Every structure is written in structure tokens, then in C-alpha cells.
Length: 395
Image (tube, rainbow, N blue to C red; front, top):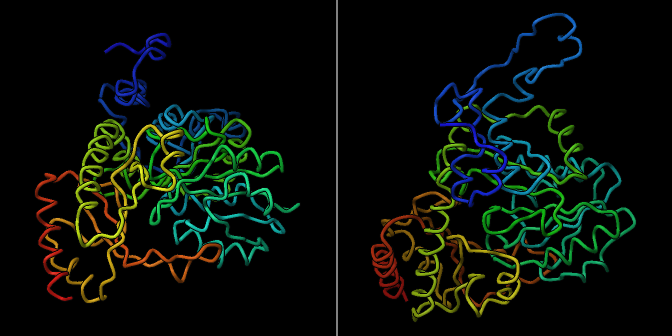
């Protein structure tokens, strides 16, 4: 296999790019993927190089051929100036926040945010003298009224990973940039394949590689990509924190990258098929999926996104907790778990009543989130059909 020329690389369609991103023949020694480099100490050829650190790799926490392969691949995919890696999705969010904020600053965080992000803001950032305010995720350009002189970052998550509100990221970015604030996006639901973050005005884009990049529920990883204005600062922050992910996890993420679009397209197809089926169920009050025309954020999704993932929620018609438990506890193909993006289907009940502070959570019935995997769709329907029978039996 010859090394890709710049001209050929520029002409490749996305599936071909995913197969070839980050494949450095210098480090792979002929192997298809760059193998996992495990190590701390890096040797220098002489004192001058040791003092200047004028070589490609200097210490294990500052990168290896494996981490460089994934970082460079993700940067190209996301349209970023550069990418840093962290050992989990939450760690990546923390890196982004610590890049943008300092003592005395104010953070605006969407009310639909991933709950561990909220906990970090409330319990850790507060200790550093950083104040957090929560805002309605559907506010769009109206966020201008919430900006303060010391607002230095706006954290967005679109769609929210439980309630799935779609945010007007370009409108928020325009306001935030006019006020000198950094825009951070948790882009895990869509990945750069379905939402190009930096092209829509995002400064720092966070991805939980644990989800769709992995695709197999067997690794923990976070990525933060930065635009030209913010990457150098991001790069300095991650080096100061010295929290590299494990070599094996990075290697598995590189492997997952090659098939991510195929898996994500199948998750989209399966997710939409199940969402439509659930919409017709008498036990379901509402299906919450941005790609469905009745979703309040559908127009924004259609404008800004190129696809949808397999993660969505439903609102059941009013039923007891025992009924919800009966519905879920007997499921055989849907596991009960908090993650998503793997080949296995998952379900989790949730209630945001106690956590939402800027908006009222009143869906009208119990809520359940589904992550649709790669099982046969008819088997998934049959599993849920049996669950609905158990639910009705408890009424």
C-alpha cells in the first residue's frame, strides 16, 4: 500500500477517509493499525536534544505514536486545529472547562447537560471560585440576556443525552463570541459524522469516545478538539493536567474509528424504525427523537445535522413505578445501563425533576431512554412487546 498523496486524500469520500485517517506507515511498521505503544520514558540521542526536547515524542504523558494517530485522525474528522485525549468523557469535559475558565469567571451551562457535568460544576468549579448558571437549552440567541461581564464559557449539549433538546448552536456561538466567551459542545450524540462542531461556531468540542467511537462497550475515552483560536490553550491545559488515556483504549478507539460510520448509520436506521414503532404503541404518550417531525427541535436538527444516532427517549402514559419496573426488569435483549453507542441495546428509566433548575421537567408520564444496538429490529420489538404486556398486567 502506497502512502496517500495530499491530492488523493483531499478527494476521498468520508468512508474511505475513516479507513485511512491516522495510519502512519512510519510507526505502524506495515501493520494496518498503529499498535498500542505503552511507555513512560522516552530516550534522547544527546544532551542538547534532552534540554531542548526537540524531538517528536518526549514523555509518555505527552503523547505516543498511538495517541498521535488518534488525535490527528479525529482533528481531520472534526475539522479542528487539533485534538487532545483524556481517560473518559467526563474527564474531557473537565479539560475543556479548565481550558476556558479561571477563578472569578462565570459559566453558562445548558439545563439539559449530562448530569456528571452538572455535578462537577456545582461541586468542583464552585470551590475554584467559578460560578455556574443554568439556562433553557432552547433559548438560542436569547442567551444574550444571561451573559455577564465575566461570562467566559457557554457549555452546550445538543441534543441533550436524556431529554434530547436540540440547541441553536450557531446562534449561541454568535452571541458568546461577541461577548468574548468560549463555546463548548458535548457532541457525543451526533459525533462529527452527523454534526460538524467547528463549522457551526464551536470552539471546544467534547466527545465521549466510550460511546460510538468505541462501539463495543469495552473502553473509556474522551476527546476534546479545538479550533485555531483555542487549541494552543487546550494543548497547554492537558499537558499541565497529565491525564493520558491507556494505550490499549486508544488502540481500540482507532480500531473503532474504521467502522464508526457504518455502525452509526445502522444505529440511525434501527433507532428510527424502533421510534416509529413505539409511536404507535398505546402505552406510549410521546417519543422524543429529534429526527421525528413532531419533535420541537426537528427544524434545527434538519438544518444543522446530517443524521441521527440510535439514542432517544419515550414518555410512557401515566403508570406506577411498579409498572415501569415490570416493563424493564424482564427485558432480555435490552440491558439496563447508563452508557450508549455499543452494539448492545440498552434501556434506562430517568427523572430530571430534581436536577433541572432553569426549566421545569414535566413530561406527563414516566420517561425511559433507549440506546438501540445491532440486534435484529424484530427481536427488539418482540422484547419490548413482552415488556408492555408486563406493564399492562400491573395496572
